[in-house]
Amino acid sequence: MKLLWTTMVVLILLLQVRLWVGEGSFAQVWALEQSIAEQRAENAELATRNERLYAEVRNLRGERGAVEERARMNLGLIREDETFFLVVEN
Image (tube, rainbow, N blue to C red; front, side, top):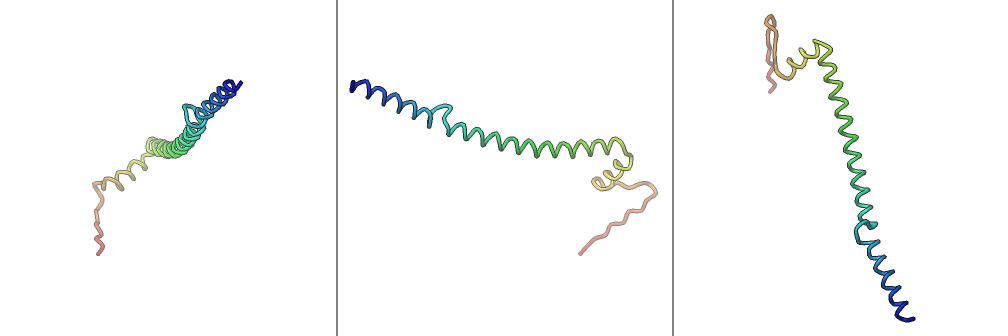
């Protein structure tokens, strides 16, 4: 009878060890949940950025003035009839 109880206690302890530290344990599940939450937050940020970029592309495709504004601001382009003034600050 003593051997049966000892065997049962050992089996229960082995199952507890696997539950707390082994594969699929509480610690591993908690870490995976944290990882999923971080990935979802990153995905939300990227989705917001993508929406802004899509809106900008739609704007550039639809309006001629938007392309001209981009060329003037980012590339420093001017028209033939315009005079360019560079203001230098101290």
